Length: 235
Image (tube, rainbow, N blue to C red):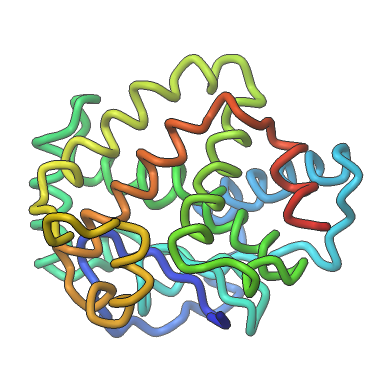
C-alpha cells in the first residue's frame, strides 16, 4: 500500500480552497508555535526511545484540502483554522460540539480535535512513512497504529494522561452515533480494506470508521508504551 498524503477529514471528506499563507504571515502565529512545540516534544521522545528521525516535520497552516494532515511531499503537518472553514464544516463541528462531553463551543471543539488531540496522530503517520512501515500495513492498521502512537504520546505526561479518558469520550460521542456502514456479518477491517475508495469518499461512513479506529486504539492503550510503538515502526 502506498499513500503519500495521509489526511484526516473526520466525518467530512471535504476539499475546500484556501491559499497557503505567506511564511511572513505565519511567523509568530500561536497555532504554529503550539504545533511546533508539540512536534519538538514528539521528536525529543522519539530520540529518547532511540529512534532518530531523518528530519523534523514542519508546520503549514493552509486549511486545505483536509482539516489536519501530514504530507510526505513537503514533510509537514498541515493544519486548518476555524475561521477558514466553510459554513458546512462549521455547522458539522457545531453539531459535534453540542454532542460533546467537554462543554466546548464549536470553535473550541474544532481546536481541541484538529489543532491538538489529533496532531500526534499525524506525527504517528510521519513515523510510519519516514521508516517505511506504513507501506507494510493495510489502511485500517495504519490508522489504528497512528492513534495508538498519539494516545501513548499524550500519556507520557501525567496530567495529560489523566485527561485522556474525557478527551476520547468527547471525540467519540459524535462519531459513534453515525450509522454503521459495515454490512451485517462483515468484518469491519476487511470491509474497509476492500472498499477503501468508496468509504473514504462517504463522509458519514468514513467518520464512523474514524471513530472505530480510535476505539480500537483506545482498547489497546495499555498493551504498549510510546517507545515500544515507535520502535516497532522503525524496525
